[in-house]
Image (cartoon, rainbow, N blue to C red):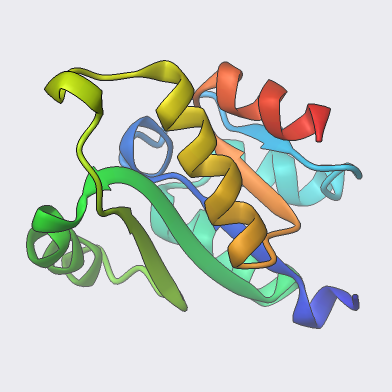
Length: 133
C-alpha cells in the first residue's frame, strides 16, 4: 500500500481532543519520526493536516456512542478537522458498564473493517493490543 493510499485511524477522546496527550502509535511499522515529532508539537488540527498530507485518509475511531455523532461532528467542524469517516460505537457495554474486553475488541474490529494501517490512540492498552496483532 502506498503512503498516498494509507489509512490512518485516530482516536478522539484524550488523543485528538487534548493536544498535550501522549500520542501512541500502533502499527507494524514506525511512523516517520519527523511526522511524529511535528504531531507532538502541533495542535490537533495541524496534526491532522500533517497526517492527511503525508499518509492519506484519516478515519476517526472513537468509543463514543453513536448517539453523540451530531455533537462530535459539530466539534470537528468547529475545529476545522478534516477526515474521511467517523467510526462510532453502536452497542452498549454489557450491564451498561464500561468493559475493557469489549472496548478493545471494538477498536480491533474497527481497524480491521476499515483497513487501518496505523492507529493513533492515547490508551496504551489499545496500542499494545493492536501491536500484538
